[in-house]
Image 1 (cartoon, helix red, strand yellow):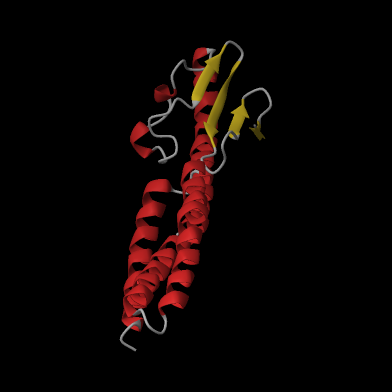
Image 2 (image 1 turned 45 degrees about the vertical axis):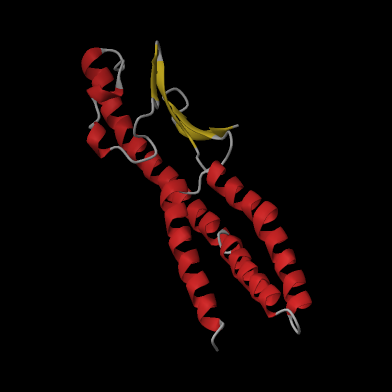
Length: 177
């Protein structure tokens, strides 16, 4: 029972690290790849080393066993980071939905602007309120005015190259690589 409280500490550390990883990484491609590589390159070797040390130290070398046990708990924390990747992907999906809904709300305002002026605005600020932009769009240039229309596009953070796009001449959302 003495050793089990360390497992509780490891789980608590894992919860804290997962929460931070989701808040910072938000399911981005980099977040998911960092977690996967961390598990494969750090967690798995640490787990194998922990098993070897625990087997070698189980009877006569108690200190070796304890080092193996600590390494086992460390590999548990690293392995549980996979939870942040899955939750992060859900967050990224929500971010894309929020950005898309925000952009869909811009379309009628852009069309109204064109009716009033005969052209689409050069800058989205003419029809939007930047302070209400979703997190995925903040600081990015997602509106591109062209001679005969406009394109609204933003990157899907959960993938390496996928772009979500709406164009005024197609009047539908598309994804492209």
